[in-house]
Image (cartoon, rainbow, N blue to C red; front, side):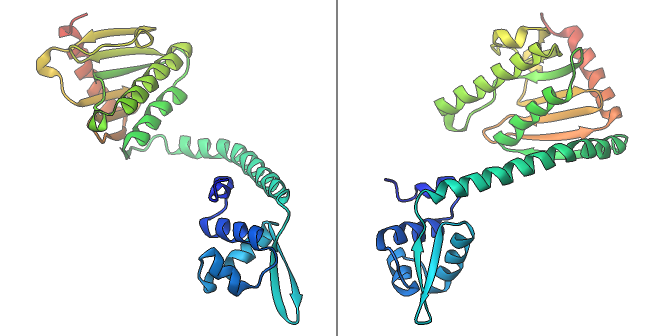
Length: 255
């Protein structure tokens, strides 16, 4: 058995050590317990207190001295059940808050906004938000589509990123969102990208690592490097400007 496995269900490293040590020792005072578990004596009391609150440890007092013991392993399921109840409660609360947050967002929709998306995870979430925000029949525009650069050319990472964009365009086409794309010359687009889309290719002299994606009053400027960064601009005038650039490039781009 992996002695750190209890961390996978939400225990801290210290809680994992103390509980596993109590399983082995049985009933124990804090001194021997702290030594065997390799935690400081100043921390062991706090850890035991947390474990008792989680229902995983109990104690008895003998001659004014506390002796601690691990509760039966079956209590771990009781702990998981409590976490599940708390999670479901938080989930319901989130559902109630979402409409209020949307209203607050709509009230501020006439204000310009800016934000930075730093790193792969943040930029991938950017693309998810585009599909979540747009509705059937909506459209978005892309200038400078390319295959993103992967850190160190890692094969698994490259496959994961390509798979992400296959799924992204699958969701887009299923939702009937129209794409107008000016791709970089030489980029190979998968079949899902071409569904419900009009695509043309920029001349070589206009290709770069910078991509612009825009729709409605929202624009993203994405810099594709081994550590991508994207900038959000929420401003109608900015989008109108990017649309003029798009229309100009569209006329000279190849089908």
